[in-house]
Image (cartoon, rainbow, N blue to C red):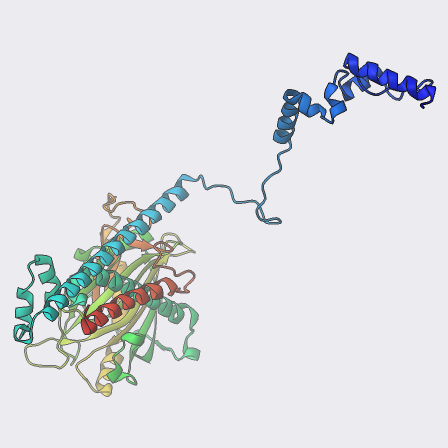
Length: 501
């Protein structure tokens, strides 16, 4: 039994379904809630699938999909992997900066290639050792090798013979040794620069133990008439740290620092000092010199000889020198005494032999005068040991006689000779403009060394991963890591020698 109103409503719904219309039936006397246009936009009149629970987007996928696609495209949220973090920096587009980055990358790639070649040589050497040990263990005691010559005869590979003929430090691991040695010298250069900067620009005068040296009154009018050169001296032990001679740990040697102003532009001074032909005109304390070994384009080992000074006979020096250009344009040349197998020294005075002396440490800071661009400022530091086992009173007597003259004479000669030579002609850059290398000429001569880079090659501050010094703070982390890796290689090699395959 069904009431008439419900029967009528059911009949209407069935007829609407048969016609394909909506199942909704407008009640009698029911007010319209929306306009016909609005109702048409809300749902299609012929949506037959609604009765079976199908939504409009299923029956008409083309229009709904396009709506979803456009909505997703327009309202796509920005990806933020680190909420709250600032936006990433814009890429570098400056041509100069890109050139520097590419140059530094090329240098790093070149060093990585050398390190890979070194590891390859090391593996080849270890392979040859395993090969030899296997042959040795396979033979009886009667076939054991009696000496090293017999051992080498069992090698048919010429490269293996070369490896066994030298220790890894000399021949087998030559590439590894060269890289390790180069980094050690670069480390020395950074340490000497930091040490010199502290003594020259952070320490004062008498309050820090420095005694001012006045120019000798007999030559003061000629060598320091305007007082542009000031000189200080302090007696210090060997400052080379782990490279110092432990036999003379408590003995002190004279250390002299000088400040001077040259009446010539910075470029003229650098060009003049970088020319080895002009050296005899300003430095009479070097009578002979030559380069022994170039370690890098910006560092080398030099040999030099000085004449007899008072009662101290002629001496020769073997010194490591390092050239660097700071960001503000300052030229920095540092030095430290070292040994070299091509130039063994004589450490006792003998007839007919030149005794070895040591330019323990030193530095030269040459920069444009900030108050007058037509002048150049000098700050030099020299710490030396005359060698030969001379008594301390003898050394002090000689130093007290020479110090009031020679430093003032040196700067007077530099100033007068540069002025007399006049402006130097323009020069073509002879060194590649690879980032990290400067094409400016550099170098100079002091007591104990003569190093020149007339065609450039000095290291720019901040370049190369093994040159991490910034604001005179040296970071040794990369160097220590490399040394640790090399030591592991050496340990593996020695263990292979002891244990065999």
